[in-house]
Length: 383
Image (cartoon, rainbow, N blue to C red):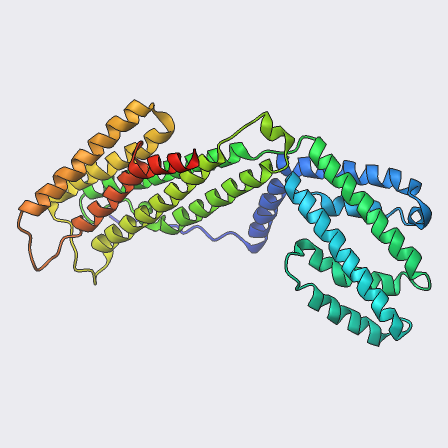
């Protein structure tokens, strides 16, 4: 019988890949947090432009800088708005001062513009200016080129209206539903726990299959788990930043110390799961690895891995009594295997990798077990 030819799907065209990437970018841009920020930025800019003509003196002649200031101050959290707004005004003030110092060199010319830009870039390296560093050369250049023969009038109007806009932007961000990113942090923590548990379950299943195992997806997840852990840290830090100077934090209190403790635990767990993944992958597929998992230990070691995965899953879904029960069961399996290794003879030609895996499982269990000494110490220090 003739063997049917395998059809190979052609790779997607460049246009298709561009369209898919553009679609993903658009989808990310229209998510509610981004839309909410856009609505508040538009509101702040409109209010700033509406009140700008009523500002005193020459500032009323430059109303278009007020909405710019509102836009500059708009940030995803209140504390960030305050910090970014103040840093911008500091950068503008330094830039204006730089321009006035260089007016002594005469009218704007290629020479003065070059000097202003060079010094502006140097001053932008000052510490603690943050986002204001980009405004130093910009403000200096605007005063030189736009201020013309009335640099005093322009500088006052420019700085004043930017200050008005920054103030409006901060107030709008403070009063109009200032966001709290607690839910995203909690969800990311739960998802990483589930991903680590799934990795342990899949590796435990691989140990029970005939080798080499048919399923290899788990062996390629190490970097994905590390990236997932980094995204969890970003989410927790974002949630922490969102509560600073946010009046809604009193209505929605959250224990960020617990979130950071969970984050540190998950980072440690990720490290150990990655280590087990690498060891097991090398044992199965790497030709230059002398270590083995003896057949007699494969199934019980797989059960121990699955049990530790159950402990991780239970941290999200089960009551504390059930969590403790699963932890005791997993600890008993690990202890039994450890004792068995200590009493049985092993081949000296093929050293066992079981010890290394058991050490990692034991460390995972210490991190994940409710009421462990590390957690009690952390709770005591937090209190």
